[in-house]
Length: 107
Image 1 (cartoon, rainbow, N blue to C red):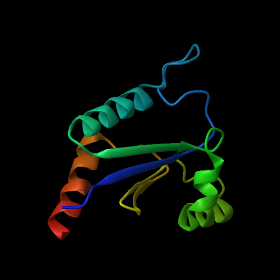
Image 2: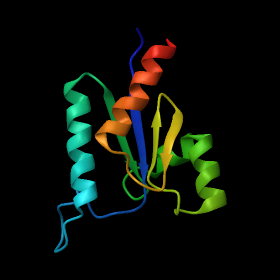
Image 3: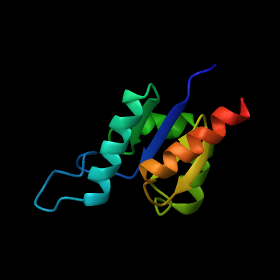
Image 4: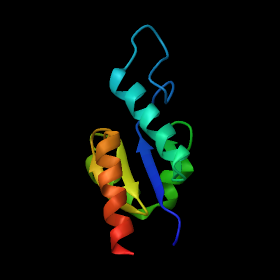
């Protein structure tokens, strides 16, 4: 069975954990915990933010087209094995697991 990879394209931000600065972003903290859980389960996770890894945006035609036409309003964008599953907000662990299960069933 081939590897499953979750890729997240994020807007510019100071830190991906959500725990920096005076205001903690609870959704981002929960998302970070969800990604840790997926990694424990053997799922490959890649996070790309516009300010820390702009090359990832330039090298992916789908995300480049999205940003060029929509700006950053559809970020974060989450993909599983290259197929976008959610735009504009972070998926929950349950949503990620449901989408991963669909990918596994399709193989």
